[in-house]
Every structure is written in structure tokens, then in C-alpha cells.
Amino acid sequence: MKTVQERFLKYVSFDTMSDEFSETCPSTDKQKLLGAYLVEEMKEMGIADAFMDENGYVYGTVPGDPKLPTIGLIAHMDTSPDASGANVQAKTVAYQGGDICLNEEKNIWLREADYPSLKNHIGKHLIVTDGTTLLGADDKAGIAEIMTAAEFLLTARRSHATLKIGFTPDEEIGRGADRFDVKGFGADYAYTADGGPVGEIEYENFNAAGAKAEFRGLNIHPGAAKDKMVNSQYIAMEFQNLLPAAQKPEHTAGYEGFIHLTDMQGEVESSTLRYIIRDHDKTKFAKKKAVVAAAADFINAKYGEGTCKLTIRDSYFNMREKIEPVMYVVDRAKSAMKAAGMEPVEVPIRGGTDGARLSFEGLPCPNLCTGGENYHGRFEFIPVEDMEKCVRMLTGILYMAE
Image (cartoon, rainbow, N blue to C red; front, top):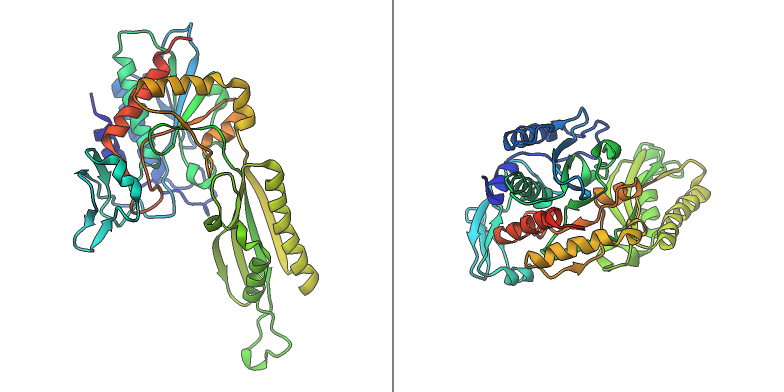
């Protein structure tokens, strides 16, 4: 039987970064390489119906007591485009406190002053990178924990619920639930294993939208440009300055939402700004979208209709309204957490998960901790001992009788 650590170290060797500018599903073919590996591993474990569909989604079943509910566990295979996931050089450090040298040659350190939560993990074994890539615990830790829990269930001599396994592509770019087969999955409810430090359970997330503002200008030779040139880059900057400065993510926390400029491209003739818009409260979420739309209207009124073309698309909504009527799903997870030695803590997600979308599609799906920290960056780490606790939590959820 493989350990959760062994599985995790294997999975992070696959580069599975998704691509928000791709129109395919999955957005990158390399995600299917991990998917194919997982299918083979599942079959070797005894999961006879394991398969990957044409869109890169992986499914499988561990049969259980038909008198118990059918429970899904879901994680995503892709990693964030925020940092490279290629050639991950993971290592395990027996942490005794202080700073950790990730890369002696490049003088890269994981410093306690920058990441005070390190103090919570003295005496544990931390899996870290060499400081040049992300680690991929988001969400390969979730995959490793689900796979390890599944193998425990397959060898168990006690009654447990039927487990439905789902691994999705493209969660990091907001598309993980796009082609998930909820009906074929066949679970009564599910959990995404896609959270952070041990004990965290999440069933509130942002309402989310993406916005793209495209600006049209007119390029004239600068030597003859007076009263003729229209520089779209200046107009784009003016648009950005119309948005409320206090609603940037660096000025918000907890339940406060934001309007975040994620990337910009431009030249004189045309420029594009891309944003993500987030808020837990539906009314405030709508107001934020209205603020962005009003800025576009102002630009068009000032410079002429068509100067700014604004597109806003909703991505997902706060799952709380779908979870509150079935709070026994949350209570079940909390009981399993306590049995695994965790203290449950309800945390609002300042982001989203596949579970948010799936909850609105009829599959209640809170999010559970996986143990990792500092996701999406070069200083990501995860304690082995906390991954092992998460495996016990997941098996506990499946072992419980109603």
C-alpha cells in the first residue's frame, strides 16, 4: 500500500498547469497525462470502473453498503498559472523551527518572518519546493489523500458508504465543473478536498465574475499626432482609475469583496484589461459589476460609443444557500475531523471551488482541508503529518453510519 506522501511526490512530478486563454477542454493536454496515470493506479487498486472521459475528467467507484448514502470525493488535477508547475523539485524537510533554505545556489529561503504559520509545524516533515516553482499541493494533495483513503476502504473489513471519486481539469481557471457529469457521478452529496490548513471546512465562497474591457484607439505618427492620435492605453488607465481603490484585493479581507485587475495588454490602437470581480454578498456583488459597467459607460460617453467594449461573465455563486438546507453534510465532516484529531473551523473561501458550481447543479459539495499552505506560489509547503490526518478524515466520512 502506498503512503499519501509517496503518492503526492509522484503526482507533483506531472506538469498540469491550465491555460485560461485556451478554448479546449481540458485547456492543456498535459493534464490528461496525470489523468491517465490515475486511471491506471485506480485499476491496480481494484477500482474496476475507473475511466477518463474525452474531456479529461476521471471517475471511479469504491462500492460500499447500499443502505448508506453514496458520497463523492472530488479534487482537481490542474495547477495555477500563477507560477510554473514544470520540473517541480520537491523535498521533505524535518522542520525544527526557523527559516528553511529552499535553494542554496540561488539563495532562496522560506522565512518564518514572512510566513509565521511555520511555527505551527515544528516537529513535522514539510514538503517544499526548490523555490523556483510552485509545489502543486493545490490540489494534488487532495488527489493523493482521496486515493489513499480509497485504498484503505478497498482493504477495509468494516462497513462503509459507497465512494464516488471525481478528478477534474481546469479548476484553477474556473472551468472545473463545466463538463462534470453530475448525473453519471451518482453521489447523494460530495466534498471537494481542495482546502488549506487542517481543520478548515468551507461552505461559503465568493460570488464570482470575470470582466474584459477592450479599448479602441487611433494610431498616428507621433510627429503629426496633435489633436488626432487617440492612445487606447491612456484610456485604459483612465478606466482603471475610475474604479474604487479601496476595493482592490490588497485592501480587503474576510467577507470583503474586490475588483482585481489580473492582466493588461496594450498598444496605441488597442488595449485590454482583464478583471475578476468577487463578493460573498449577492447584492454587493451586483453593485461591483455595476461599478465596472458604469466606468465603461463613462468612457464611451467621453470618447465616443465603441471606445470601450466591456464583457462581464458570471463564473460561480456562493454555495451557502445550497448547503444550509443540508447542514448534516457539514456536520458529518466535522465529526470526522474531530475523530482524526482536528478542531473544525468554518472559514469563508476567498475564492471558489468546483463544489460551488456543483452545489448549484444539485450536488451539495462543501470544501475540506488538505493541509497545504501558501498555494499558487514558490513558497508553498505541506506537512506530511497533516496529509495523513486528512486521509483519516476522509475515511472517517465514509465509515460513519447515518
